[in-house]
Length: 265
Image (cartoon, rainbow, N blue to C red; front, side):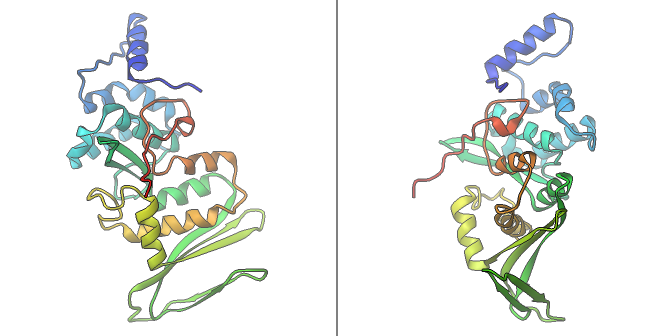
């Protein structure tokens, strides 16, 4: 595994500069400066679906739109950014692919990486294993029933009007090999799960609190369904990077240790 802390990164870049690459980092650089200088490394990480210039603009826009990100430790932001780049997901855009979230971890403001609902859908289809995948909200006046066990069944007939409040969420997938699966969570279970496992849930910067509750709930229930899917290692590794804080860089960010501290309570 190729990991490097900030000092090692700076040393490597200094060595590269001596060889005439022109790449230079210093501890006095701001995060935006680091993003611009590291664009060649970001280019190496990006899949063909995105240009490094566009990704750099998105990163700088995220910093401008969420000033607290500039107060995060530089390496946590760069690591989260590289994570998004390797997955080919645009962070902090209306697409809802992924999010870079300021989060106080171990008493220090760091950047947490989160995959969004549409990012999860995109990664699933790109894996080549998923034929169809979706998540839906069920409302009070919808006709809804489901059964687990030997003969699982899920039926959802949305009400034509006056559907009421959301009461359930469910996620369904079908694989190219003919397999399928689904998971159902009540609104109460969703709230409890999010508060327990999404450590940035209560943050004012969290998509849960910024108008994307529905999308995050759909992502959550889909992840529960995919736990039982026969997924390729690449997709499993991508999902393992969700809701993580990392302060080291690697050619494969899924191999870097998550430094997010979970509450004991």
